[in-house]
Image (cartoon, rainbow, N blue to C red; front, side, top):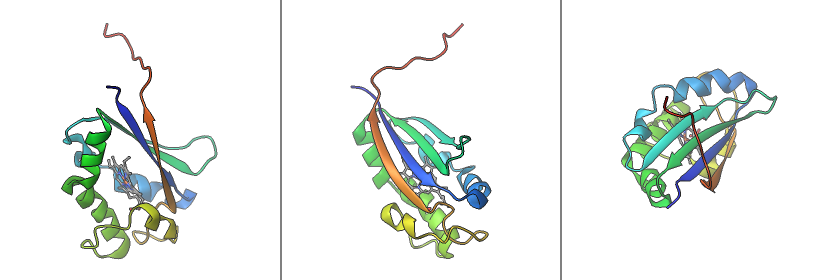
Length: 131
Ligand code: HEM
């Protein structure tokens, strides 16, 4: 069974980049411990676009689905919602709701003004030879 890659594409206005990266830092724990988790990278655009890629790789689709429904995902993202609304109990504000951001301010509103989920299967891969 090939691994699956799930990329969350976040549209982030230039003035919110720092804030977005700050919110992600230290949150790797919300995904690292999950069963079937293989890789995470937050990718900052350097080619003039305003879209960050949240690259994640999983052993299977089922592992990704389980993580998305998990307490770890909900809690980690509810925290982001809390910073946004000043109401950590909200627990959502995900998916489509992400499009309604104000796009500026400090600690208020989502850093991302939109999001889109891309899904892939790993067909081939390689890495450096281990010595
Ligand atoms: C592919 C899997 C993922 C999906 C589908 C997803 C979903 C989303 C969505 C839709 C948003 C924008 C709405 C919002 O601002 O709350 C968001 C933001 C965020 N996500 Fe995720 N996420 C994923 C992976 C991750 C991972 C692995 C982490 C941490 C390591 C993470 C941490 C965050 C943080 C900190 C924000 C707040 C950004 C902001 O202020 O706009 N996400 N996520």
